[in-house]
Length: 190
Image (cartoon, rainbow, N blue to C red; front, side):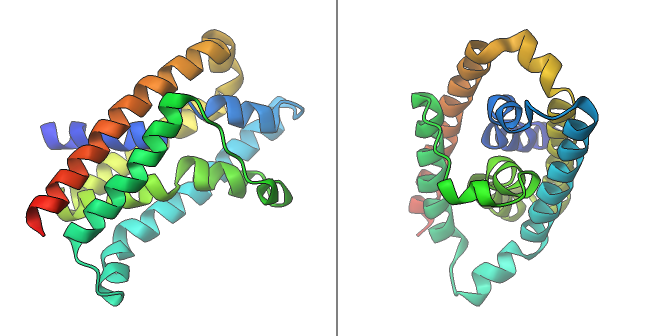
């Protein structure tokens, strides 16, 4: 049971559902409540599909490119560290070309909800804790992320920009610590 909590919390931190609320709200602020809720459902469905594809086939991709899990842990740790530092420092980097895509898919579903950090985390956890525990924790995170997006207007009003940013920075610090752990585990097993 403790493993599921550990996996859930790690994915929750990487997914940064609360920290993503200002971005989601800024993309959907001019939409009516019904449209915003439809966008939140589309976003979560696309994010869940991407997450499940990498959960079930991520190791096959690694095998295809002849990458061992220990090297991947180091790479994943470096990526997570970048994301963690980005959160701690409060940097919001949006690619200009992302504005050309459908907002529910890019940038909301990916890279915001199921981006490189989440993908690398679930691949590592599937190897470390098994597919079933990682699947349960991942699906629980998808449900939590959907709840936050569906109720984004109310939650954002309650937290405000500063509250959301403060939570995001705390999550970034935890994410950076998880990244260091990944790098250390990978390095020790090379």
